Image 1 (cartoon, helix red, strand yellow):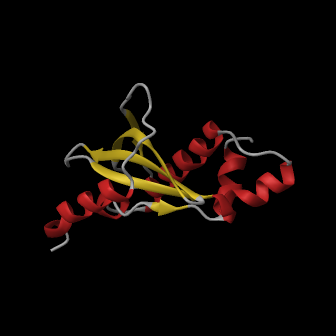
Image 2 (cartoon, helix red, strand yellow):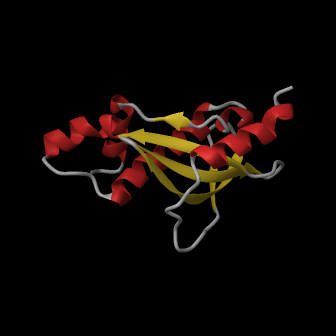
Image 3 (spheres, helix red, strand yellow):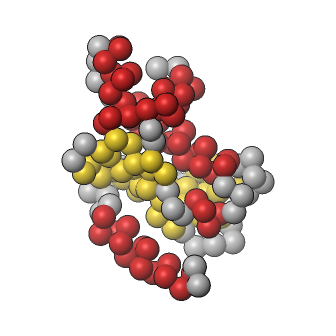
Length: 135
């Protein structure tokens, strides 16, 4: 039943996050999750929607076709850090937060089907990810 509506999810993601800010070159990267799965991912682009940015990745395991996964980073999650540091985070730092969130999503999901739902970063996790990035 879950796979039955996969086309609908892909269609909705394409409409909600159309990826206008695409990277100049697409590189396929690999990540081996703590769950044992090996994921391949490509950064498709980012989409700003109000006060949040969705970083969209095309993700697959070696056995499945690629799925779009959105990592949503709201401005409110980054605001405490920006207030403390007195500066706005650069786009590459925001992308770094989304990428660490993607890796944590890979690590926390026992099955790849759960990854396809994506994730939203909150303020606590944003601070943790920025510490990992040494920002």
